[in-house]
Structures are given as structure tokens and as C-alpha cells.
Figure 1: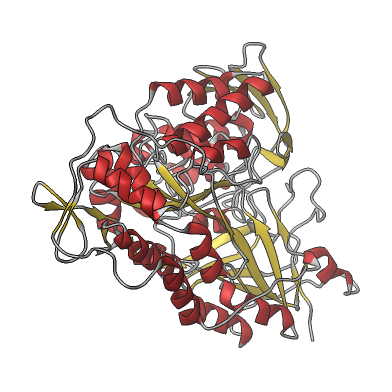
Figure 2: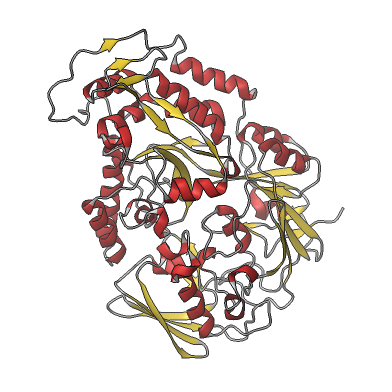
Length: 571
């Protein structure tokens, strides 16, 4: 919120004078807190331009065949099936195993991949795809229209328990095989993001033979440049070169099988350990270079750094507006106003990540900068005023607000396996700043099962943090449409239930008029900030580090590294 705007208010009578049980504000200020956080991280990092993968490869005489590239990633996989998973790690790995029907080459441009061509009916509900000839899956079975039908049916089957992919094709009605290489896909309603959805790895085309096996025997079988070898849970996934690969997307720089013999994705959650693995030569590349180490890596001989802002949803803190104190918009806006986001982001990420004021990344189509005026800006006095007005006008001996004998307490579960980019440090800063306004945030540590079942599905949380890469504004439908709760394969973790937002996102997805879609998406951005369903934190940046022996790594529309054309320079 800008200083000149009026805050969200209630028609209730003015709050009674607050009775103070003891002094509430601690001696530390928000500014001092941010300095302490920065000091704890011990380094200041500056940036410089990176020449990029193409420049790295230009110095070599040409690609060299052979070798295994080891790439370390934060986090781990919970499943190998892209139709089930929602994690970025799974998308990154599976992009090498599965090809898609179409490739996204620009915000609104799609080119052939496994589909050589397609047509769309006048009513926008029927897509007819013609498939490439001569493509085979890793298990030797041919790519046919039946594989497309089996893949899409698998995604929407309730037994699959899709955590993401099903929401991408929510209007899917059925697929009809018209011939060996021709398939018709029918939608329940017009849906302009359909091609973009089909371009992501979570909807990569799978072998029907593999999908027909019991879930306990599932292994990923696609048509991609690398084939699955093994998965050592919580340790690594190993892939091998597909010597028969012949189906790169249109415009790919490399057309034949991969140069590399194999790929190994190592799961290394701890930032310092992952960075050390790169600089010591244990791995050839890493995702998620710690910002604290970025400058050092740029100046370290033998290594390179690439930085790309991720499109889609920023890293945001979502407020569950269906329970506890957060049912009151004044409390939600007070929490937003109590956190000095820009200061925390600067002191933790040293300028490598930008503080966000919108749930949508600025690199995403239909991003609306003017919507940011609806966000409650940092203002501790305003936060206190809103809490007073909401009836939280007493203070307990521990400095937290009290109402009807209950402390203003919010639960923000900490899922250690999903922690990355020093988000735990950022959470500590948010906790400390919220306390200045008298808001208590608890951070119980939970395992994956508890996090999913009790919290994300069961709704047993007040706050939850997440980012999501997807280069389309339709990601707003994923995050805020009432029917897109986590239990229904969506991302509406704020549990928003707004007829207006539903109308806007559905109209934007159905219309063929770009101006109507832009207006609808702008309305959504403004409304979710005005109602404080979300507190934007920062725009994720893919900080990827490589040894200079690694050449010609490309990046897709979601900023995932693509290793089809990569190779290793021999000493």
C-alpha cells in the first residue's frame, strides 16, 4: 500500500483503548535485525554479466562425445512420475527423460515437438495433433496416438493423485485415437493455456506399457535424450544416453542423440555442501548456487555462473484466510505491514534476488506493476493500528498480542526437505519482525508425510511458503481459483474462495482476446494483494554453476537446464 492510500477498514466501532500488560516492543529494530542477518551470513556479493552457455562452448573446437555429467540439486524427489509430482526437481530431471507434444519458444509461441502439427477447432474446444513418425520409447515401443491418450488419461485419473499436472488440463474431457499418428483432444470449454500446459515436463508423453504396470513397479519411460537407469532415494537419479534419440523440439541446436553417455543428478540439500561439491570437482554443475557464494564463483578460475529470473509465481508467503486470526483481513494486512521485505531480501541475498511486490514474476506475461499499489507496504505503526482495530489490543508478558485470553499465534510449518535458497534464514527474519508488531509465528519442523497430509491437504497451517515456475499468467488460476486447492492438484494454499477471482481466471483462460485476458489477470493481482491473501517475498533466480569443462547447456522456458546438447571438454 502506498502512503497516500487508505487501509482496509471495518464497519465495526472504533477499538477500545489498548491495555498494556507490559512494554511490547523489544529494543532491536527492524533495521538492526536485517543488519544482524547480513552479518551472520558474513559476505557481501556483487554481480557481473555472465557470458552464458553459448559463449562457454564457443571457445572449444567442437562437441566431444562421451562422459557422465554429475549435477547436484537441492531437495529430493518424492516420486518419479511427472504426472504425480509437483516439485521443480522432478521437472528438471524428467525434462531429460520425456519429450512433450509442443515446445514453448516465446511467451505466446509454440512449435512442433512430438506433434509435427496441430489444428484447433473454431470453438476452441478440440485440438487435433499429428505425431512425428519413427519415434520410439526407451522400452522399444513406438510413439502412437494411443500413447498421448494414455498419458492424458493417466494424468486426470483420480487414482494417479496428481499434485499438479491435472490442474494444468482441468478442462480435459477425452482423447480419441483417429489413427496411429493422429489424436483428437476434446476440452469441456475453451482453454487458451492448453498448448503451454502441454509443453511442460509434467505432461511429457509416457510409454503406455510403463503406465500399464502397477504403481509399485512404475519407472519413467519416455522418448527423451536420456533413459532412466536407477533412483537411489534421497541420494541420486542416474540416466543414460538414448542412442536412438531422434525427436528434439523445433529449433534445437543439436538434432541427434546426446553427446553425453550419462547424467547423474545428486540430491544435496545443504547449500554449502553443494557449493563445495562443485568447487572441489565432485560434481560438474549445481543448481541453486548460494547467493553468498555467487561473487566468489564468478571470479574463481575454472567455473562459470548463469543467472536467470524465473517466470511464474514468485516465492510468496500465503495466508490461510479460512482459520484463526487470519480470517480477518486487518490481521492479514497487519502481518504484511510488519515485515520489511526489501530490507530482508537485500541483506540475505546481496542483490542477487529482487524483493517482490506482486505474486507474479515481472518476467511473466500479463504482469501488472500498477497492482502493487494494493500491497500493504512496510509500516509498523500501521500494523499496530490494524491489530488494535481488529481487537488484538492487549499485550502479554512475552510481547505478543492477546485477545480474549488467547495469544495471536500463527503456525508456519517448516519442511526441511524442501528448504533451499536460505529460506529458513528469511523465515527467521520474518518471525522476528512480526514479533515487533506482537504477532507470534511458530515454525514446527515436519516430515514430508506430515507436511502433505496434515498441512497442505488437511489445512492445518496459517502460513505456507512456495514458489512455482511456469511461463504463463494462467499460473494465477493455479494459485487462487477456488477449485484449485492442493487436495485437487492445485496451488490455492491460501484457500481463497472468491467468485470474482474465479470469474476472472476462467474468463482469461477461455478468451481469445488478449486485452480481456490482460485485464482479468491484472484484476486478480490487485485483488489478492488488497485482500492480503499473499505476501510476495522475492523473485526466484536460477543461479546455476558449472565447471568450464561443461559446454553448451541450454535452458528452457521455465529456466530448467537442458542437457541434450551438452558435452564435456576433455583436459
